Length: 167
Image (tube, rainbow, N blue to C red; front, top):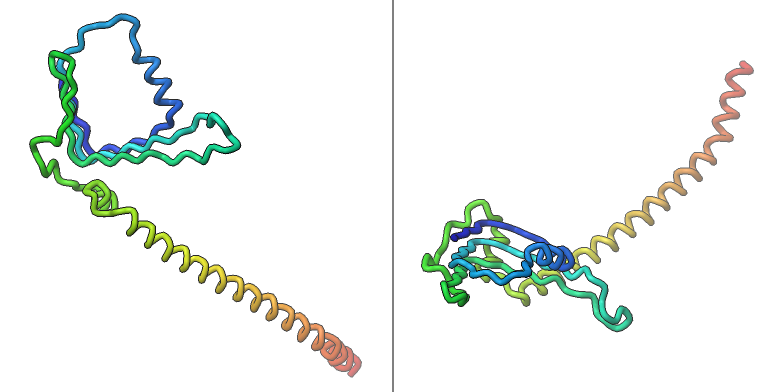
């Protein structure tokens, strides 16, 4: 049997994955036929959603992200599993895959670059928040000034209206 997986993005919860394993499990041992699985440009994300063993001290689980660029898994007639890079080293073209996803799949993005970019974006976000708060304060001050000026003008405009009606 041969299976090929190309350009697949899959996010699974651990509880769902374990539930699927129960469906696949068989009570009898059968001879498994040889199997060849080829995987190209694929991303799997496994998220732990089961309750922690100790909710008070256990940290929040981090999703497991697995990016596979080019992989071949072969099960031979002796039930041995052989995992290797597929013979086609470059694999299929990454057409239709975003530039960021392609760079992640090719290993071009590392954690330090991502952390540096995240910290820069956090600084920019903090700056924008401060500017927004300042603009809101200015807006509130301008509204107060405008109301004050309107209340100052209203009595004199009422007096002008009554004089013109009396004439």
